[in-house]
Image 1 (cartoon, rainbow, N blue to C red):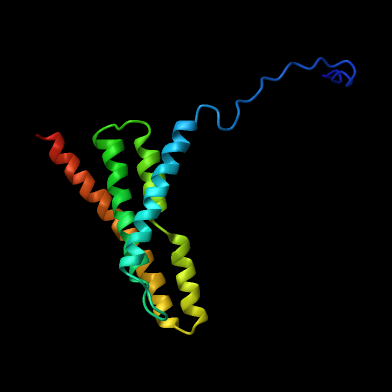
Image 2 (cartoon, one colour):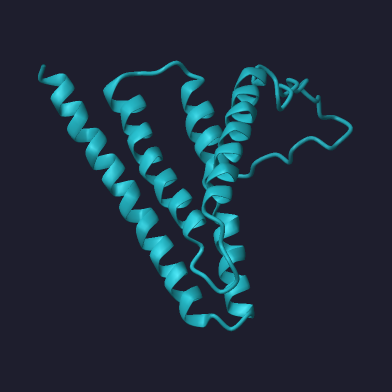
Length: 157
């Protein structure tokens, strides 16, 4: 069975297209809490960096602890606000994306490793890369596990 050809461009009637919402439409509160949380997290990271400075060729302990602690906290936070007790819709953007996103610093992790490698501290760089990756993953798992254990105890009260 032959199908008729679609109408030519002149014969087509174009249906009006709905206008998509503006990209930031209705999101001002979310962006604001992310910005405030990010600023506070970055200030906290800066404070830890001042307290635990890294000297040339040394293992960047401050950045390591920041990233591991941040992963532990994000593991706990996500379980607590999604499984234990529903939180206000702005808690997750403020705390997880904002504060912990500003606190953790995987860009500094990469920069620290590159600096160590470029200055001949290969063993320290490889150890730092491996320890941070393993520590971050393990800390996230511990945070999730601890938060789930807390949630079980809270539910059975």
